Structure formats: structure tokens, C-alpha cells
Image 1: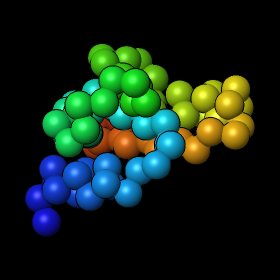
Image 2 (image 1 turned 90 degrees about the horizontal axis):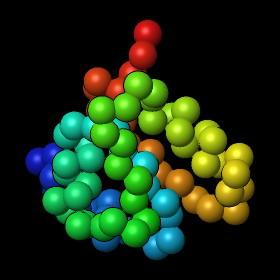
Image 3 (image 1 turned 120 degrees about the vertical axis):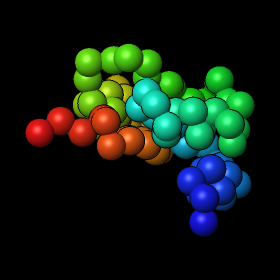
Image 4 (image 1 turned 180 degrees about the horizontal axis):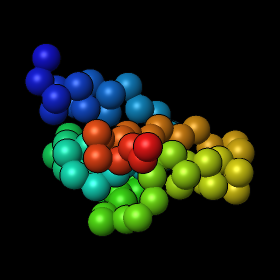
Length: 77
């Protein structure tokens, strides 16, 4: 399965989840699959891992389901 096809499938299963993507391939693929600018948060050249942003959103909005997509460049050692 191609990368973009995975994102298209996930998008078809999405209901009300907030989506956070890292810069690069995951953000580009999610945008290509959804063109969503209302329920998705696209990190640009950001100096913070996606998971840190997800945790803060989770603490602020505990009732909201969140999907976080991180590419290989989004992980810090």
C-alpha cells in the first residue's frame, strides 16, 4: 500500500478527531488526502515534537480525540 493510500483510508475512518501532523511527508500526505484546514493542525518547521503538542492539546481538551502523525524527522533522541 502506498503512503498516501494509508492516509486516505485513515481519513475515511475519521469522525471528529483533531489531527496533528509533523512537517514534511505526514503533513503533506494528510493535506493531499483531506484538504482539511478546520480539524487539522499542521506543524511547519517547528522545533518541538508532535507528541509534545498532542499532550498539551490533550490536557487542554480532554474530551477531544486526537490523532498525531509523526514522520521520521519528528522524533528526537
